[in-house]
Structure formats: C-alpha cells, structure tokens
Image 1 (cartoon, one colour):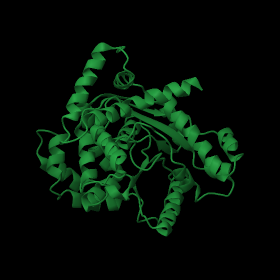
Image 2 (cartoon, one colour):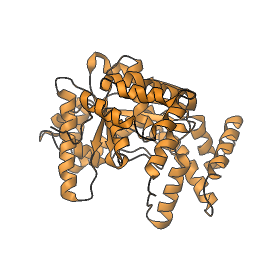
Image 3 (cartoon, one colour):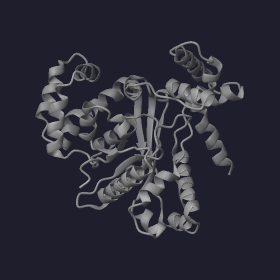
Length: 375
C-alpha cells in the first residue's frame, strides 16, 4: 500500500543505490562532499549499502556533516526534548532551502540519537531516476502534484492517509512537511490553509480529534545567509512585473546545487511547542473555513516567535528604513554581500528594484516580529 509515494524500504534502497552508483552525477557530488577522495570510494559504498539506516549512517550523515563544515558557521537547535520517548509529530516547517532544511533536521536527530523522520517532497524535484532514487532512499515521501482537480483530491487523500498512518503504525515515524507549497520566496513564512485541509482529509468529522491525531508541531528553520536569495528576489521581481514567472528547464536542480554549495552563515532549527488540545478546541469553535485560518495563525505565531533574528536581517531592516546601522561592521559586510549577489544577475535588469526585494527577504521577519510584539 502507498507504494507509489512512500520511501523505499531496505530492499528498494539497496537496488536504487546500485543504480545511482553508475550515474555520471556521482563524480561531482563526491568531489564536493569528499574532496581529494577517489569517487570510486563513494561508488563502492553505495554498492554495499544494506538498507535505509545503513545509508543514513555511512553516506548521508557524513555528507551533511561535510556540508555543515564547508558552508556554515554552525548548526544549533532547541526543542529536541519534545521527541523524547519516541514521540512522533507532523512537523510543519518554515521552508527556505529545497534540500537542506530537512537534511539539517535529520542530522540533528541522528546526532542526538533520535529516530529519523520521513520527509514530504514534491515530485517536481524528482524529475529524473537518479534524483528519485537518492531521495526516496533518503526517507522521502513523494508528493504528487497535479493541475487536474480530481487528481489533486485523490492524491491529497492518499498523502493525508499515509502521513496519519506513519504517525501511528507499529513502527511510527515523524513526518516533515513544508507549511506551504514550495520555499518562502519573500521572507514571509505563513502556513497555507490548504495544507491543513489536506492533512484533515483522512481524519474524523470532529475537527479537534481529527487534528489532534496528527500531533502538529511547528518548526522554524532560519539561516543567517538566505538560501538562493538572489534567485528568489529575481523571481519575485519578475512576478510583480509580468504577473508570472516561468522556470527554466533544470532550474530546480540548479537551486538544489546552489543551496548546498553556497555559504549559509549560522543556521538555527527551533522545534516549537506542539499544538495543544486547548488550541484545537478553540479553533473548532469557529465555522469550517475560519477554524483552519485560526489554526494556521497559531502555527505562524509559533514559527515567528521561535525564528532566530540574525545581524543580516537587522541590517536589511535598517537599510530599508534609512536608519543608521546599529552594528556598523555587520552593515558593511551585508552591503558587500548585496553587491556581490546583484553582480551575479544577467543584464539588463532593474538593479534598484531587485536590491529592494533582496532586502525585504531579509527584513520581513524583523518587521513581522515587531508587529507580533505590538499585539
């Protein structure tokens, strides 16, 4: 059951990694993750993997550790105690990087002796067999996207039922899923009500009991240097100007690679207090659509409260407001970063407009936190 969307089991992982070991992409991946080592070492490792946990221990954990060492100034976390005793949750997470948001969370689990979660990933990222083999060997659930309304409903019901089953079967697992469709492009982390409605499809009629069974946990993932920031700023700029942004072939893969190799500064993951029975009862007191809106607002408030505000974000907010910098050296570093990012764009383009959009990606969490404090 659920064979078309669930992660590969041990046998499926062994077969998939043998296929992946012969792909031409393996050499550049090996060169970045394990510089100076013969790519045949990684190839031979993939050919001798015994199952899902073996893959995590021998390949994924060292790979993410390598990425952290090369591209970050450290990974910190809070709230891991919620997972004590094998408790499992549907983690509704802010989403800034295609691969690394969930990869860093898996790393934290592994590093702290906690069971790994499963990860919901859109099938738009699984557009070749190599990527699908790697991702589904890496505990990833395939989220089927469609524009056909009937197919959307059917696949949504299937995904909802699978997530609910994983939380409560004989060997339960937490599930990570973005709190909205795709990465946050404008710096504003808000939960889509449609996602919550999708999760509810497989549950009981009673709203509070339905959502309670999902063990909802908001998660805030924040980067000091925004992942693929200039790409996001340019996409938002084009959308505002023309009303639509059409991705180039291979653009998602380009964003995956960029997110992995670029510098990220410090990274913080906050596992927030799970949604309580009292909060669900409060939401249930409203009509059908309003109850989902209220629940989304509670999740957003948790994520925003736990968000780590970095010097880059403060500098961006001050620049947008025309204020004197509170930290001159941090502001000067950020100005240099802005210039370097803008210089990567092809010409012609409206440099001033894209610069402002880039600033807003960083500054929006600061502005939203101020509004939250004023309530």
